[in-house]
Amino acid sequence: MTVRMDSSVKASFDALCAQFGMSANTAMNIFAKAVVATRKIPFEIKAAEPQPISRGMEAFMALREEARKNGVQDMTLDEINEEIRQSRAKRDGKK
Image 1 (cartoon, rainbow, N blue to C red):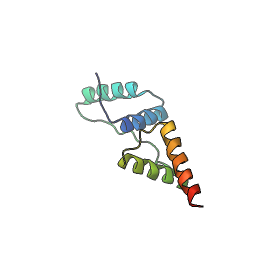
Image 2 (tube, rainbow, N blue to C red; image 1 turned 30 degrees about the vertical axis):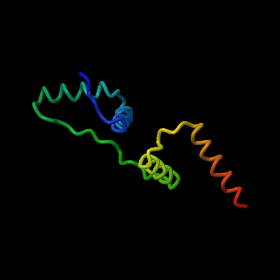
Image 3 (cartoon, rainbow, N blue to C red; image 1 turned 135 degrees about the horizontal axis):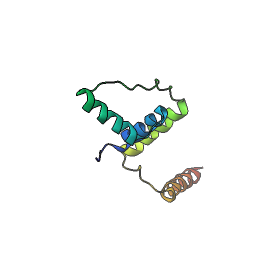
């Protein structure tokens, strides 16, 4: 079986499965076997409530979302460094 899902959902699912002590593949097999055996969704798997993120992480996530909105989330490190260099040159030229 192949399951397609958004990459961010997959990353979260993989992380939660690891907290449960199993792989995503094992979790999907357990789910399928339980559904077949009971002919319903027979159980709830629940993780601990997520911890609040730090202010630094909030700032990072906001910048990441802004980059996504502006279409620059896939910039290379060289491109980012060039942007920084140009910004600093512009700033220093005003002094």
